[in-house]
Image (tube, helix red, strand yellow):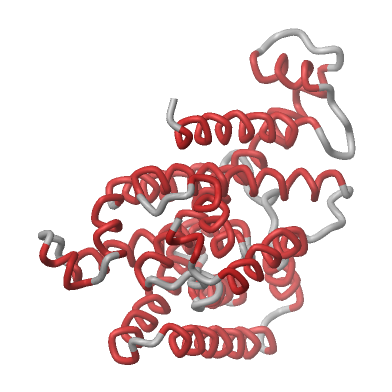
Length: 335
């Protein structure tokens, strides 16, 4: 069996193990065998464990799985689109745009709740903010054409969004402000079973689209002129990639908060594992790696007693990877 196939199988097994471990750890530790019995409908030693696993921990574990894979895929799409290894939904301001949209909804809830359900309003606002920011970044990319300058533009856009959020916070009620601050720390545990479809459906559809974009993304890596010579419509591909990235990053940010580094660091981990830049293999590997890292972060948060913010854990995992990319340059992407 080819090395890449073995790596993908190992990633699937590791992700499945982390999924079960995420259901087992917490303030109440549950043996893995009891977790499996609770999921499969078998007998458990304590019926309270079945309720804990199915009603509390299962939605959170699924959220970590989907959100991790979605953020990883969005980071891969961004890095390929701009041919920049340090591009990502958070670094280029996409997450900040989503956060501004969510702030408008959460801090001005009476205006929106009269004609839209809260979940729908938050999702649409986060998606809209992500699209607007990504369009601005793409426009800057066409005019500037320099990766470092583009990153600075993204940072400035993020600072602008943060300033607008601060203005909204000053004029908001204390209860709404507290909810937004808690949302900003990031958490996989805020998505209930009733809200889970609002997260899963857009992300799964966008992930399917990311799989379909694998071959055109390979052409984009070789440059716009070469991609055009292969019959790829570069402008159409950019619009589609923008839409897919906005759905992935915007939806996850809406329900889980602005989660740092997963979208930026995970694609480099996948490249290091597979030693390839072929997206037909890289897309599934990146999604699986992101799902595994999302579950790993949630396990750490649970193990700490839920007192540790999710963004603190993702930063501890993501910062070393980013520093390694800065140190090694583009060698991972060329492997």
